[in-house]
Amino acid sequence: MSEQFDLVVIGGGSGGVRAARMAAGYGAKVCVIEEYRLGGTCVIRGCVPKKLFVYASRFHDLFQIAPDYGWSVDASFDWPTLLANKDREIARLEGIYGDLLAGAGVDVRADRGVIEGPNAVRLQNADEVITTRRILVATGGRPVKPGIKGAELGITSNEAFHLEQLPKSILIEGGGYVAVEFASVFVGMGVDTTLTTLIYRRNLVLRGFDDDLRQELETCVRGRGLKVRYESTIVGLNEMPAGVGVDFSDGEHLEFGAVMFATGRAPNVDGLGLETCGVILTPSGAIEVDEYSQSTCPTIYAVGDVTGRAALTPVAIREGAAFAETVYNANPTTVDHSMIPTAVFTEPEAGTVGLNEDQAVELHRDIDVYIARFRPMINTLTDRQDRMMFKLITLRDGGRVLGCHIIGNGAAEMIQLLAIPLGMGASKADFDRAIAVHPTAAEELVTFKAPSHTYRNGERVA
Ligand code: NDP
Image (cartoon, rainbow, N blue to C red):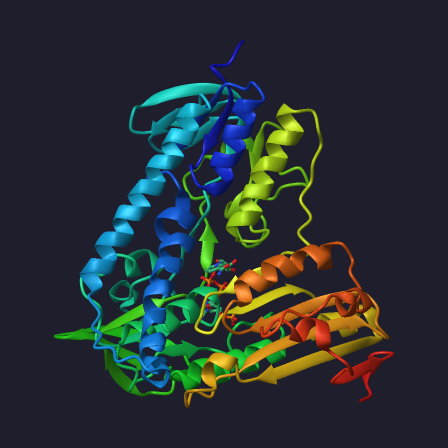
């Protein structure tokens, strides 16, 4: 039997669209099924609108220090203007995604795709079954809320992009990327921070990041007015006339303008029909795939957040491209998930690539750690006390750089560039050979002299 398509992609986000375009470019007949909007989480309700919000929130800090640089600013913030402009830009990008797919000759269906067999997908609304040689699942993930009383009264990042009004105060639960980024955004937009803004069940945000980076970021965000409540959870929400009542695990009760859950994301696998083809899921509910993104059903592949490997847009894009390269260009390609640079778009930013200190000691035993903390130059004419931090972790005595962690303005841009030498296996000596650019903050990276501390045979010695 000959199928209608070579490839049906379920999910028109970053990973699915990249795979579809490349596969079509290699001559495959491709269909993309998307039930919401082309662009996926990143473009529609993730990275892109978030970064636009981050830009908006940063004017707050600039206006605060403007008088120290001789400027008088009479500023006010209009939430509806930001929302309308953001929506216009997202619609423009969505259109570009559609144009790119059309230009590549990909058939796009606005529908929900449900797998009916290894070579069949049902378009649920059209009530039509299409046949295909292969299926690529790129359905991403969705925010999850804890199963507490009144959870429906809390929003997630999905709704945070469309709030009709900026809440007077907000409580955000979680300690990951989404929680700290949105907390930072809302502080910058001027929500009332008299009450707690962030609540986290452990005692320091960004678990898994380098401990010095976590500490330094915490000091910075607290200095900016953000109140954090640690070792506490929300146990219940109640509707109140002007907002949401919150019951805390320690028995306290407070009222907020809004409550947002940033308590993680789950892979979108529900109702996809994966069980009809014997597709095995991981214990966390993601699609289990091999190094070529092939699931346990040979005709079904999966890329991006739905596979639970690394929930980051550029990783999904790489996985989508590697899939197309492997399957449609006879060029077996895998993705290296070991050295992924990443940034947290708080104010100030955090950027990280490679191993954190604990991982480096555990793996290599003999390492040197270089740390610089200082007030960035822009703060010198102001009374702002927040500091930058540069941390380099290397093999002992000028050896290979294993990890780099930065707090401060521009950390995201810097870490992108640092991913190149780290991926090439650059040593501390290579960094030392580079001539500094002055006056910059990043010159710290090439002017480190003695380590702040070292480890020998796994023991901290200096
Ligand atoms: P994360 O998994 O990073 O963080 C979830 C947080 O919620 C953790 O701090 C977790 O605590 C806490 N949590 C989980 N369940 C509960 C619960 N029942 N009660 C209370 N707290 C709970 O998820 P995010 O949504 O922040 O981000 C999802 C992914 O999206 C990230 O992993 C990242 O890959 C990606 N992302 C990347 C961004 C970027 O690159 N800048 C920006 C935003 C998202 P604990 O630490 O104890 O597990």
